[in-house]
Image (cartoon, rainbow, N blue to C red):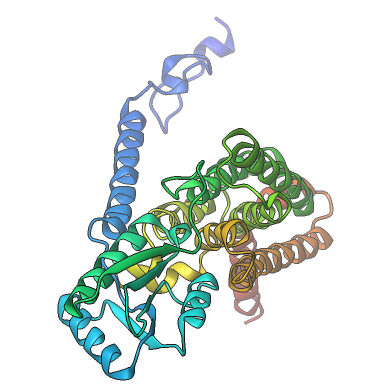
Amino acid sequence: MSASSQSPADPSTDRVAAPPDSPVAQGEPSPRRLFAVAIVAALLGLGITLSFGYADHDPRPHGVRLAVAAPAAVRARLAAGLQQAEPGGFDLVGVPGAEAATQSVRSQSSAGALILPASGAVTIVTAGAEGVSQQQVITAALTVASQALRRPTKSRDVAPLSSGDRAGLSSFVFGLGLLLPSVIGGIGLFLFGMRLRLWWRVAAATLFALFAACGGVLAMDTVFGALTGASGALIAIGFLGALSFVLFVAALQAVFGLPGTALAAVAFIFIGNAVSGGSVAVDFLPGGFRQIAPWLPNNAIVRGARDVVYFHGHDLGHPLLVLGLWLAVAVIVLASVDLIHLSERRRRPHDTHEIYRTPAVVHVIRRLGTRRRRPAASS
């Protein structure tokens, strides 16, 4: 009898090890992962519904700025009436005349205006490009206020929506067309580029942002005729917006690995998309969302797109500032992670690819653990 046939079974398991290709060695397939994915997907749907529901279920004005060209006594009566009808909803600001009131709306300093001449009809000035729902609420409120003054009213839209953008949602669609490919594409860039130095991903992200912006403008301008007359500026805003999205996704992935994508999705899809100002104006959002909306890239893209198409760039400074800040933070994080990679490469020059694919937080934890063990060993 051969020695192999007489060898005892492994005492630790009390059985002979199974062949590597047997079902026992490979593990029996289990449906638990499928059920886990189903539950997680359902929870994601719940999260999106809660976020959009909180933002959109009961839009009402909060401190909406209105310019009023009328005597101080009349303005006080209007303010009292509006306060009674919608407490805290409107903030009336006096302006010297009709031209100042109109310019205030054109420059987006005010959401609407009321011009009360010495005689004749009262003029309600709005900007349809700021959002149809906002325009309707302002018009209705000022119409009721004018009726209390026993004066007829007429409306004037100083920034009407184009025939291809009747619902005023094209800027929101433009931003959405940049957001979703940025998050999904960011996953692809991570999976195919995680063994390369970070700047290769940055280069690919830049190329993606340029093509995504050009594609978005091609669709919304040339194909649909919805956002017209400012193609160059719109491409620039789309490029900065897409680059902000995809680079911030890459930065979080560089720090936390693939789970960093989930953090970006929470910031941009769950929250940012709900407060973008595309479906509900920022001043009509509930508390919390109203405060953070102007500082998210989603709102910056929508606001910037509307500004260059309908308002001749009067209020472009803030959207550009917001996009620039998000880009700067992303680049700083990526540069910091790259420095960590360079430090690790000096210590382990033969593990370059493994160093690149390891999240920065793991490198830091390992480094801290090594420093703690050294004093213990020396003692």
